[in-house]
Amino acid sequence: MFNNKTVFIVGAGASFEIGLPVGTDLTGIIAQKLDIKNNGSWDVHGDKSLLRAVAAMAQATGSYGQAMNRFSDAAQEISRAMPQAISIDNFLHTHADDADIVALGKMGIAASILEAEQASRIYRQEHGVYSIDFGAVKSWHNTFCKMLTENVQRQEVEKIFDNVAFISFNYDRCIEHYMSVWLSTYMRISFAEACRICNKLQIFHPYGQVGKLPWQTDDGVGVGFGEQLSEYNISNTARQIRTFTERVDDEEMLSRMRNTVSDASTIIYLGFAYARMNMELLRVNYTGTQKRVYGTTYFMSEANKKQSIDRVSYALSSKDSGHMIVRQTFESVSANQLLNDYWYELSA
Image (cartoon, rainbow, N blue to C red; front, side, top):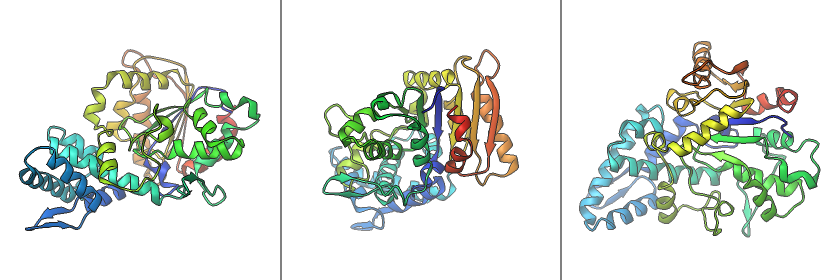
């Protein structure tokens, strides 16, 4: 169990360990899915479910033909621009004033991530029951859960998330899904009980997510992990994705997220790229607890690693006082390796 308040800040590299795409791969997938155009009839090089979702959106305008031409133009513009984009998030921020680009971009994200969840190494479902082959999946998720439950007896399981929070810059629900199945299996409790406990975990998705899992909703109606693509879940989940501009305007969410970082004594960056735009979202509002900071810099050059460390120092420095870091440890290793290497320190 974690004895000190610990915040994990998670990027695409962390989900990559279980088969989700990183930023450059995601832009390529989105480019393919949005490759739809009208050549007299709708030419679908892209995703058929996504095309149906776009058609439903066009139908709702009351001017189907005109709207479809407009939406397909926007889809093509996104598709062509993806090789130039740092990430889909940066592209949508650049074109935040274009409602069609934003709407089609969000649909592309929704279709790509739901499909990636189903193709991931932690998706397995038989007769409506989820399971994971924990022996075959080598990722930080398993190491984290081992740390989380070290020396914890089953009657203490209600408290395991007391000192842990996550900030995930990913649209997927891999963390929530993995933990619910892991707890059910390891603690020998029902899946429903495991989900109830997992609902106590504080987890922020600054850019939104591809829908709430059913157990995260009050009515039990959500979007299942790796749910089969359809025009309905693409449309619904796209509305739950937020651009950088939309998140900056969400002061209440940002304040809670930043306060959680300020109050923590340990910050751990896993598979995170330290992009300037994301570090701006993480900039704290006030001086809080002094901190130990750990982070992965896998495959980064020394120059980029140095700049990443500087960006972390900036984000953990409040606007009216000095920074709060007492120790910084950045390693060019995978997320799983970092947790294994510093297990004893992090759980002390």
